[in-house]
Amino acid sequence: MATPAGAATAARPVHTAPTPLEPVLTHTGEELAAVLGSLTGTRALVMTMGSLHEGHLSLVREAQARADHVVVSIYVNPLQFGPGEDFEAYPRDLEADLALLARAGVDVVFAPSDAEMYPTRPLVRIDPGPVATVLEGRTRPGHFAGVLQVVAKVLNLVRPDLTVFGEKDAQQLALVRTLVRDLDLGVEIVGVPIRREADGLAMSSRNAYLSPGERASALALVGALRAGADAADRGSEAVLTAARAVLEAADGVALDYVALVDPKTFLPLDDGAHTGPGLLAVAARVGSTRLIDNLTVQLGPRHP
Ligand code: AMP
Image (cartoon, rainbow, N blue to C red; front, side, top):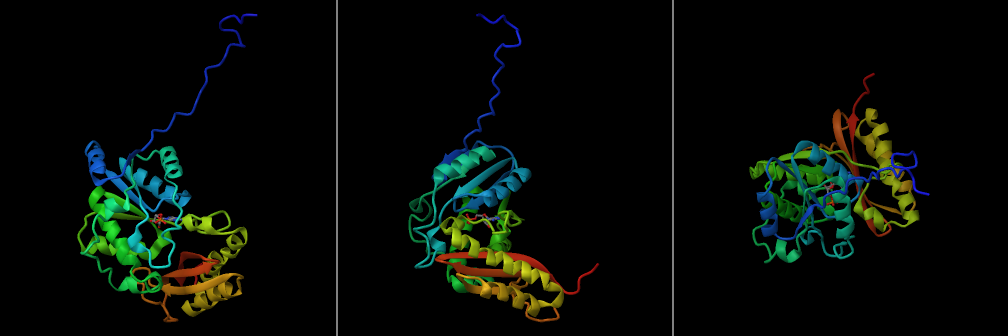
C-alpha cells in the first residue's frame, strides 16, 4: 500500500555525519610549499614519527586551538636512531594515520621519504650541547643531534608560527626550546602534558611492541614516578629511593636510569635541601622495548 505523503510513516531524512575533509598529503618540499602558499592565516606544526595515538592527537588539538591551519609531519628520522635501535622495526601505518588526521580535521600532512629529507649525507650538523649528554643522550649518543637536525629542517620547510611538542619527551622539548632560542628560529614552542592510558601507562607508539605480560610490567614506570612524587616532601633522596624501589621490585623491567633533574638545565637535583619543581625521569627496557616516562614533582615541605 502506498504511504500518503506527510504521513507519520514517511521515510525520515537520513542524517549522516559530515565526511571529514582529507588532509592534503604532501611528500616533497615542493608539494608542501605549493599547499602552504595557498593558505592564509597562521599555521601550527606538529612533528611526529607516525603510528599516531591519542597523545599525538592532543598535540593536534592544541595546535588547532592556537592557529588557523595545522600541518602534521610524519617521518621516521633515521638520524636519531643508533645502531641496533628499532629504526627498521618502528611501526609505520600511513593510511591509518591519515584516517585519524582526517577525523581530527588536519589541513596538511607532510610525509617525506628519506631521499627527500637527506638527498645527500648532511655535512653541517647541530651540536645540541650539554643537555644532550645526560639521560636519553647518555644512553643514545647522537640521538638529540639527529632530532635537532630534522626539527630544524622541518621548521624551515613549514615555517610555522608555532610548533607543539609533548612533555612525554621532556628532554627533547627542552632541547628544541634551546635550538629555537640559540638559532633565533622565531617560532613559538608549546608543550603539551603527557597523555596516559586509563591505568597510567604513558601513550607511546612503542607500546604496540608490548605483549600483555610486558604491558602489565610496563606499569612499573608510572608506578615509580607516582611513588617518587608521594615522597617529594621528604626531599630528592627520598624521591629517588621510592622510585627505584618500585622499578627494582618489578618483574621483567631492566632499568636504564631513574633521575631527578632541574626541568630546565637537566642538572641533577641531588642536593637533599632543594625545594621546588624537579623532573623525575625514568627509562627502562620491558622485554626488548625501551620505554621512557617522566613527572614533575614538587620537592620540599607540603603547604596545606
Ligand atoms: P613521536 O611520534 O613519538 O616522535 O612523538 C611526536 C610528538 O608527540 C612528540 O612531541 C612527543 O613528545 C609527542 N607525544 C608522544 N607521545 C605522547 C603522549 N603520550 N602524550 C603527549 N605527547 C606525546
